[in-house]
Image (cartoon, rainbow, N blue to C red; front, side):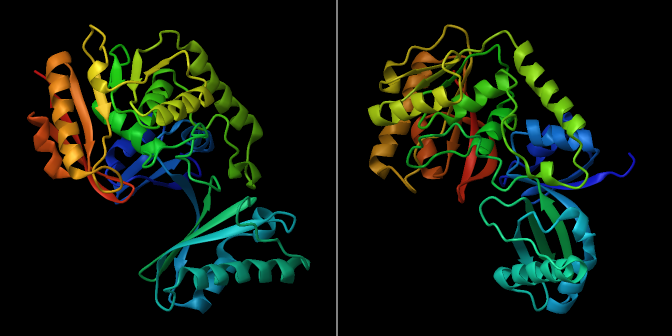
Length: 378
């Protein structure tokens, strides 16, 4: 590959391997998994493609420079030499600096960010007598610095906000599941879209909506404004081509999956309906308001996915023991031959299902150590 682009994808903890597989499917090369991230290489077309279609990453960081950094002075000099800032950041464009990690003499992210900002602004003033403005909310360029053991990596973020925010959640429950985590957990199940998918405790509907987007090949980034459209090497023709290909995928998918959700709380039910409408999936996702014990499942065997309360942020422990026991009884009575996948952040509750787990995957949900557990229902 000529002039490969080096990229880091930030991922939810526990989804690194699944994220690597997704990126390979989308054309990434030299893919390597690390803690909470995946490093890879792409050409420009594939870079646009992963930003459009990848469902699991929080963000994509394109490396533009890497240099030794052992204090504030070497950071300042390294930033000024990192690239031609007059080309990448004309004074007419605004920017923001995000910093992660630490190095010798650089242990406070705010101070390190200030050093980066000063180095860029001084470069601009010295070379053209003008400077860019800082914009924390909607910058034209989002500059990311990572410091680690005497090394600095300077990157450009392809988006000013987290990619897990798809834009359809006009309303959220008390402890909402992040969209990219839901998409990754669904990938782990290896759900075949010819099978029904049911969430009996659907909350804000994230599992249902992400499953529908997967089934219909709706690219999560199709309507997003990306910061790489402001980059020096942005290619409008290539970008239009990738967007057209992503749109055609959605149009060509004709067979609709059977996706069903259930929510007992009437207020949350209306929130789910609002989210489904916002995602334009009201013809795909069926939702009803009742206790899950009254939910009628399709005759064809399928997959049940759910993220019940753990008792960490919501739910009383005694009530949750009853909930898990009722969920186990429901599955055994009405879903024989199905699979149950449950996201559990409280191991003591699993036993109340009265079911034997087949597989467990360790993931993190909002900082809570969880297990994504598979059960075969007999």
